[in-house]
Picture 1 (cartoon, rainbow, N blue to C red):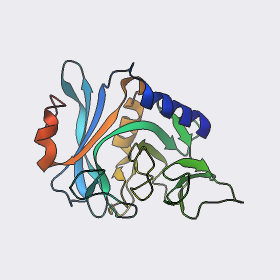
Picture 2: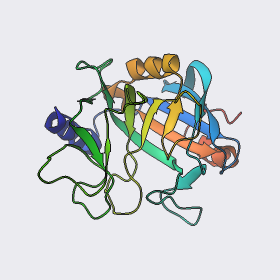
Picture 3: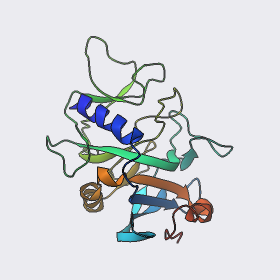
Amino acid sequence: MVKTVSLLIILASTSLLWAQEQLIVVISPEPNSTTAMLQRYEKEVSWHKVGESVPVILGRNGLGWESGNKSLKTEGDGRSPAGIFEIYSTFGYDENPLGAMPYYYADENLICVDDSNDTRYNRMALLDPLHPPKSYEVMHRADGVYRYGAVIGYNPQNSGGHGSCLFFHLKNRQNTPTSGCTAMDEKPLLEMLRWLDPMKKPRLLQIPVSECVQYQKEFDGVECE
């Protein structure tokens, strides 16, 4: 299953044949906020809303950028990624996927490697008990927040120390900030996962509201408030 997803990710990232017609927009009130609002969009002539706007929870230290002179995201900084990212795949505890996206079955053997010095950094893998990474995240978590989720395509070059293993997933019972993921309630998360279509090359735009106007030039129809 993991090898199949990896191949599909490569094809999706290199293909220029599919139009980008799905966009998830997450806008926070300010860069260090731990909460934000999520709105889905689809593109016809311009971008138009799909469904209702829903609240989400961000990392405990707000947002961090992949590059540039703003607050940069690094491994373990407690920031959710700011910028534009592909959504390549989904995952969950059920053997069968909810929708059409490439899917990781998150059984007890699936991990995501967050050791910056490991060649598998920022990748899903099956745990090898004889050669485990020094640091990794178990995808079949006891608290159930990974029961359903989607992989955010942050740091696609897998550059060590830049941040890893970032997802959409369920909120925890305490509604506390994440370590860098974007968390939400079960109903809107399931709706989003079923809506995602690999043929429409879904992307995430995740930014503070202060940066929104400049992105409206690229995404005509996206609202900042």
